[in-house]
Image (cartoon, rainbow, N blue to C red; front, top):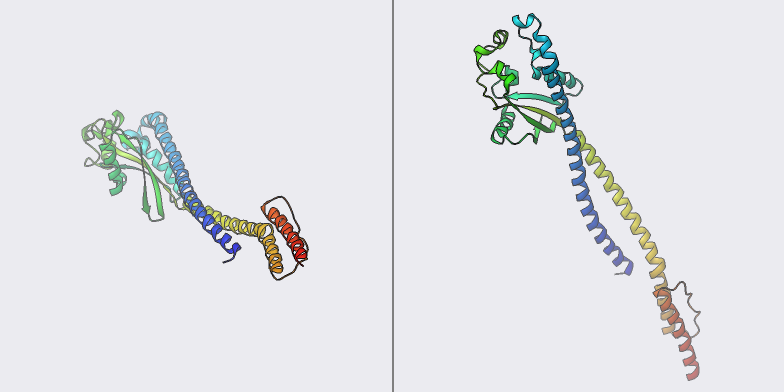
Length: 290
């Protein structure tokens, strides 16, 4: 096996191993970064939803409750959850894969009832009251989604409508009936705000960046091996080949070979100088013998 072939094999093993490690680390970093971006979107959506809820509770609801129609017909606009959900329903017209839901185990409005996985999140908050946030991933109809959930506890404003049917506004009873949404206890986790953000686009961008990185790595590997091969050939192999040819001619009896060119002060140059001196010494020795 030639020296250059051995050199290339060593380079391939080294670069291949390093490239594999770099690719694995980079892929993990890109996917983690994509997940962080999606989580930031979810946190922004959650903050927006809470802002709408706070605005509804502090500014909008008091004004609507002064409306005489509120005594005759329940105005859902007075409920903070209604404002947040309605806002995101408008958002979903342009971004249908983004969802916001205030899932409740025992809601007044059946549309807010928690599905199986949402109910599990609410029970998790009940079992871990110290937790203020839960992050998870799930498969939806459009692919993988990241969801961010925060608990909703029954507080005094909630109990005005959800403690007992007799204490609830008559207009609400007339709208939703008295079978659901009651019996809430103070401080109990009764619901969860859940934001879902699709991960497909972010993950797709991360994979595209990873594939582009692999292409650059392969191109860099090929260019580096080509440059090293050229350097090894001109700096090591070619001078050694000249030495080998000169030694071969000397072994066949050529007594007056031309001195080999010496370039630089490296080990190859030193060997070449030594070989030239040896050639001169051999020529003198044979002349003395002759």
